Each structure stands twice: as C-alpha cells, then as structure tokens.
Image 1 (cartoon, one colour):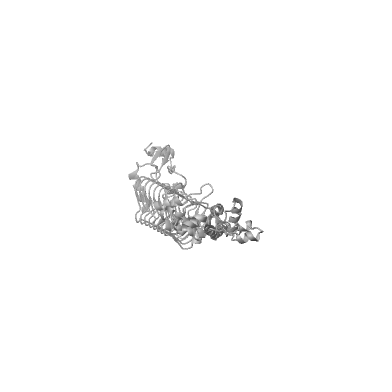
Image 2 (tube, rainbow, N blue to C red):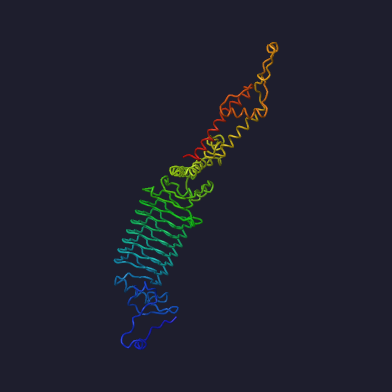
Length: 471
C-alpha cells in the first residue's frame, strides 16, 4: 500500500498549466459523493479519496471530510466506507440522503433521525449493528439489496412513503416492532437468517413478502394489515425456510380477503388466534400431522393448544369449503375433532360419544374407515347368527294333521347355516324383515342391535362419501 501523495513537482511535470483533477477509482455512480476530494491513498493498485478508501487507517482525515459534507448539507454518501461508529442520532436530513452501496464497518445509529426527503440505502452493507429506532422516513426509503450482518433495529420507525427492502439480507435479528408503513412496504426476496419481528407493526398500504425467506421465527403478533398483504413462494421454493416458524397471533386484519398466500407449504398452528376464514390460499400444501402441530404449538408456549388448534382447523375447513377444496376441508374438519379427542386421556375415552364417532367413521370424514366398520358389523352379526336360535318350523311342517296337533312348540330353534346367515345379516342392515324370525331372546337382541347399528353405520358411510366428493 502506498500512503504518499503526489508532490508539486510531479504535478507540474504532468501538466505545466493546471494539475488534472483527481478521479477516485470507486464506482462511477459513487463518484458523485467525492467530487472535489483529493487523492488519499492507493489500495490494491487503485487510487481512492479518503471517503472511499476501504480501510480503518484514515480516521482523522475521514472525520474532516465527513463533517465538511454535513456542514454543507451534502448527504451523498454513495459507496462511502465508514471506518468507525456512525452517529446520526436525532439528525435531520433536509435533502436526499443517498447511502447507495455504503459500507458501515461499525455500529450505525440513525435513532430518531428524520429523513425529510428520499433515503437510499440500496446495496449498503452494515457490518455491525444498525439502529433505526424511531427514525422517520418522510419520503421514499430504499434498502434494496442491503446487507445487515448484525442486528437491524427499526423499532418504531415511521415510513411515510414507499419502503423497499427488496432482496435485502438480514443475517441477525431484525426488529420492525411497532414500525409504521404508511405506504407500500416491499420485503420481496428478503432473507431473514435470524428472528425478524414485525410485532405491532402497522401496514397501511400493500405489504409484499413474496419470495421472502424466514429461516427461523417470523413474529407478526399484533401486526395490523389494512390493505393487501402478499406472501408467495414459487415452484422451486415453496417454503419460507427449513426451520421456519410464522406467528400471526392476534394480528388485526381489516380486509382479510386481501391477505394472500400463494404457492407455499403452510402449517395450521401459524394461524392460531387469527381468523383466517377469508384469507386467500392458492396452491398451498398444509401439514396435516396433528401430533407435529400440537408439539409446535406447545413449544411456542400457546396456552390451551388443543382447543385453539381445533378452532383454527375449523376456520381453515370453512375457508377450504367456501373455495370448493372439499378434500382439504375434510382433512381440516377431521383434525379439528381429533385435536379435542386426544386432549383427554390421550384420546382413549371410549365412554365418550365423540370417541365412538371417531371410531365409526373418522367423524364422518374417513370413507375407508366407515366402510370397514360397516363391513365389520355385517360380518360380526352374520357369524353370531350361526350361534343362536331361529324359528325353523316353516321348513319342517308335515302334512299329518295328527302330528301337527300333537307337536310341542319349538322354543329353542336352530342356528342359520353360514350362507343363510350372511344373507340374513345383509337384509337386516337394509331394514328388511327377513325370515325366519328370531326365536330365542339372544337372537332377538342381536337382530335388534343390527337393525340399529347397521343402518346407522351405512348413514355415516354415506355422509363420509358426500363430504369427500360434495359439489
């Protein structure tokens, strides 16, 4: 590295009349930030001014140039390399503030700062914590492609015009809690590697989170959405992240029909304590594993997870049915009942009516289960009919009047053979009155039971078929 400046003799030799103006080797776009600045040092064969020189060994000279720009109300800091902590606490930017491609190597404080005109942080790099706590952005705020390597704090920030965080990267916690977005807010393509918090944030206009990646927990608890909110993925990237967790508890949705989830893999417990009946779900795949959902809700410290998850499943079922996704609605209804059943004794409570409803037909939602139980009833009673007595006198009538007069009445009867037993059981299930009549008390009880259970199970089977294929 050469830290010498050119001598007067060298300059005169290069130009006997006027020394050529120094041109910094930063990007062409960034040169507007250092017009009039002299050569400072070389770095890797390139000549830089003090503002764009990428090194920490320039503190005193940088402070002089930096303060000179502020005093002249020149807020063009395009590509500037900040070697130390930057303090803009409470500072008022009366003109456009342009930090395009700037590099903040230490903490950057914009707490309570006021941006009266456009604020451009496009492709800026924050190597340490960035604090925009309660900052006010009165015009367009652009953080397109910005990189936050440490904590990004926008707690209580106010964005009066469009705010763009398109394709930004947040490597640590990002807090937008209590932030107010009065115009469009775009987080499209943004990557959140740690916990982003939008709790209590207010989105008065469009909020775009399409192709955003939430690798851990994204907190939208208590957030307010007054207009369109778009959460979308793609065929290549259907999820928000591998271990993502979204939390919409107590979110206030003024126009729920304008909240859209498109081409995503979703989990029902994300929508606990949030009415999702009118949300738009397009090409979404849901996790229907109730055990996993209950575990996730419990880990999220949600009180009464069984009951609240059951409510969420019912709301999702209403949404799916209203949009003619009947198979999906059936799965949601099943899990709504199941969540309440397994709440008591792990679900083994055979003395309760809902347990029998589950056993008989999966709450009227499982066609195969209802059919197998119906088949089981039919076979069970057919087998039992081969063990109890039926009146067989019609088959053994004689033509002798004397024998008929002297014959003793049959009070025991005979069991049906296997073939007749299955035919008999079938007729009972369809509410016919087949012959022969049951003779013994046990036979009468069995026929009476099948007369009740068979048609009831057939009705549950019909209900399950209808719910699965209703139009």
